[in-house]
Every structure is written in C-alpha cells, then in structure tokens.
Length: 245
Ligand SMILES: [Zn+2]
Image 1: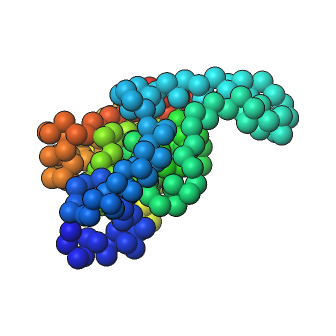
Image 2 (image 1 turned 45 degrees about the vertical axis):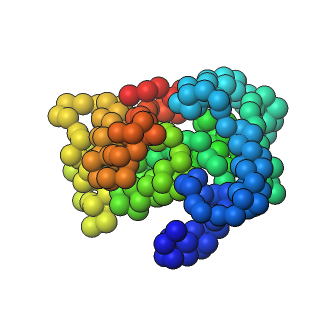
C-alpha cells in the first residue's frame, strides 16, 4: 500500500476491516479481519443488492403510506417505529472497527430523501453521497471511487426524487448564485424541452448515472469487469416508492 493511501485510510478510520482490496498482511491479522468482516457482513444480502434495496423499499412504502392515515405527529412516529421493518443492524463494536457497505446511493440533499430511511438500512450498510440535484460532482465521484476501490461496493444507485428543488431551479430562468449555476449546469444539460419536472428528474438521474463511468476510469473499469452495477432510480415522496429509471 502506498504511504499516501495508508495515511488517507488511517485518517478516515478505514484501515483493517474497512479495506476490501488485498494487501500483504500477516496471517493472524488477516484471520482477525476475517472474523470482523463476518460480523460486519451480517446485514449483507446474499442475492442481488439492487433487488434487496427494492424489497426493503417496498416495506418502507407500506409503513410510509400507513403513517399518512394518522393525524397525530407522535402517532405517526409510533406507527413508523412499531411497524418499521428494520431488517438488520450491525453490532456497534464491529462498526467501530470497520465497515462493509453493500450498496452506494448518490442522491439529493433534500430533507425528505434519506436513503437509510427509504431502504430500511442500518449503520454500515449504505455508502451515501448526497448533493442537491444528485449530479456527478467531483467530490461525489471521488467518494464513489473510494467506495468501489476500497470497500468493494458492488452497486451505485443514482436516485432522483419527486419535487426536486435543484431540478426545478435548473428548469427555471431565475438568477442563481455562481456556485448554484455551477451545480445546475449538468442538470440543464440533461433537460429536454417540454418535459415536466418528473421527467426532468428521471433524465437527470439517468444522465448522472451515465456520467459516472465516463468521468472515472476506475468506475469504468469496475463496470467492465462486472464488479460494479450503476443504476438510475426515481423516488416518489408521496407514495414512498422507488422505481428504476
Ligand atoms: Zn432534490
């Protein structure tokens, strides 16, 4: 391992079990890591990670829609917590020593679209990158490179959502700050004249998903070698449903 990479990983607390790439280490250390990796993997699905995300989302949307039937804020929270199908939770002491997320989600910073909530995942399951408008921004792509290279994440879900303010801003003519103009530039490039907001969100998610392997040789190689799937998706806030794009 290059010194600079080791230093970066130490800074991020990701040495040891956080590493998924093979490194030359003593057998005892490797065995200890193996035990820890098992403990970190208790929530990891055996099948297709994309199908698992969709399965958990179906459970989420059921309780999400059920909560709508309660007029009391605390009642809604109770309903969600009691029927919340939290499928799994890794032990905190294992998480203190490493991580083994099984999917990445690139999604909007919007307060209504937290992926752990939408996909009923506990700590250590999802490697999440968020920015308004879920574009393939530089730091986001770099973060996903890290997830794929160092944590062997096999899936990146690029998820747009209904009512997205960033896509709405990209579609409008109102003046924006210089940094917001920069943020909406790739969204504007994906727009199609005459499209409504929902279609614009779907096109933007698809464009960001397509941009990831174009912008990153590391991600491109992982896709080519069958180690990585990149998929665009759309989250409907009202129903709680995630659908593929
Ligand atoms: Zn948004």
